[in-house]
Length: 134
Image (tube, rainbow, N blue to C red; front, side):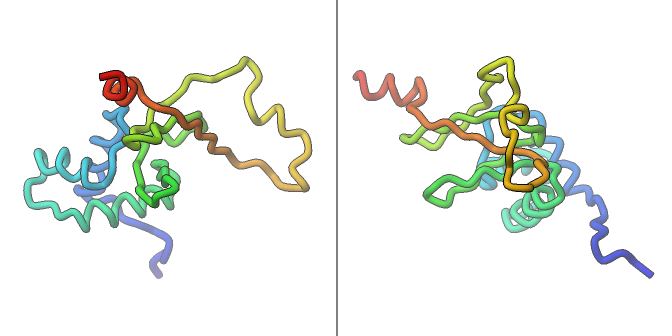
């Protein structure tokens, strides 16, 4: 009997994951589609979306959704901080902001077992700051 939760690792899914993990730019699905098409010219945008959804639900990638609903993806699924530009939507990783990890600061979580966290700072990226100065 087959396991309904099992997802076979397709060539498309593997290439999408490899390309995403090479990037630090936190691309949209459309951005990643353009990159993946260099290796798989016939891959559709729908295939990229479906595979990103499976990868994010499986915990292999992070899906970062902005207030506007735009999703960007991160190949680093470890807990880490992000900063998002409120002007252009760019997302960057931040290094730890203190010596004390967030998990150690959360003594009382109302009985929850902490599995991870997501913290996102917001600001204006250097590129958008330069545009405003002109």
